[in-house]
Image (cartoon, rainbow, N blue to C red; front, side, top):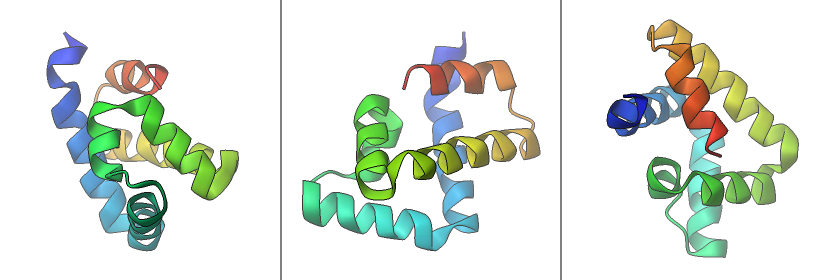
Length: 92
């Protein structure tokens, strides 16, 4: 069941994260595109392992932890089922 709404949930999290941390995601999008020829948003929405690799290459493991912690905070704010969010994060 969580898989059906996973894309919508991911998009909500991406948009909220971008509103709150524009420079973090802006830098990520820029370097992912220019250095690795990867669309970071598409990777986040459709290829979580690739997205994690890109985040850790650019920001390191602490950057990835920041992203996950903020995604959890956003999910709580938006009242997204944390079990669904865990399933999304665990696929990464």
